[in-house]
Amino acid sequence: MTEEVNPKAYPLADSTLTTKILNLVQQTSNYKQLRKGANEATKTLNRGLAEVIVMAADAKPLEILLHLPLLCEDKNVPYVFVKSKHDSCDLCHQKYMDPQPKDLIMFLHALKYQGDGWEFESPLPSWAKGDWKENVTEAL
Image 1 (cartoon, rainbow, N blue to C red):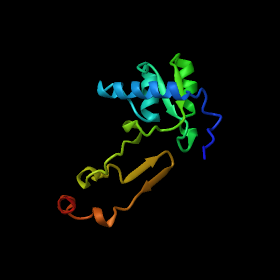
Image 2: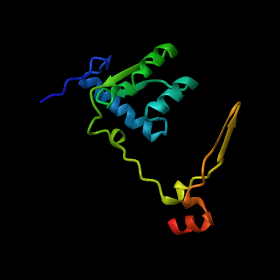
Image 3: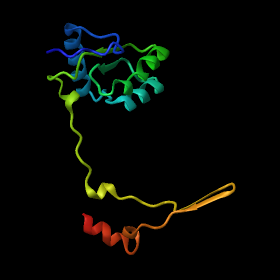
């Protein structure tokens, strides 16, 4: 059973071109020249650093990527969709590690907000009261 490709994913690379593109992706990752994700792609396009943009047509939802072709055309950067995140492409299936508790420390920088004709004060949460350093040490 083959899954239909969204017609919005255009131009779509054929299998031969997909293989060549994924080999190129593997090579660029070795030289630390690869950026992953829609946000990173947008940043590199806006900064004028992008050489080519490769997108997966099976991204869910595809609408996350659909601003990139327009931006590529504005910046004169070639782009292509590949049918799916290929099994042989380790980078397509990269898992991100969960952050450590020490990386999740949140600093409250404003409890009171004020503007022209309005004011808002948020209460201090119960977990933030007392010695916060002691709470952080326990979490680690």
